Length: 176
Image 1: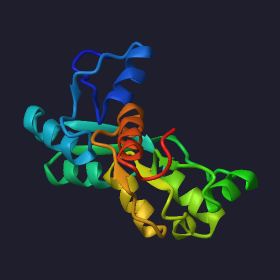
Image 2: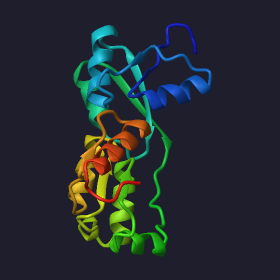
Image 3: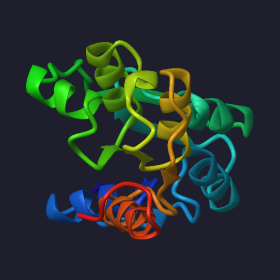
């Protein structure tokens, strides 16, 4: 990085990817959200500083808006584009019939893609645990027809897996 450039990330997953790319992360949001990162940046950076936000092409605007409101000059660059996934018919059928115990959604776009394939998440039987990686994904699930039964405490694959196991062990669905 050029001198004076500091890097901030929302969560541990992005921090790990940055580390693999040889990028030193100076700041990780405490609450693993764009809102939290904006607050953290505002607390340590000089107002009027230039901030580059690298995110999904259709990413949430909360971080951008908060930084601009706080007086930063903000530019946004799309690092990737999310495309709807094609969900195999046998997977859709396995969920519809309750042949699986849980469905995990790791992003809002995954919930939306699956809802399109299924005709809405309301088609998932109540015996199947619906899990979301965080509150944004949980909101997408709810909009798509089914509020999640469990939301991970932290937005990570590990926390999502732990939340699903905990829910299944408490008796909803058949333990895996």
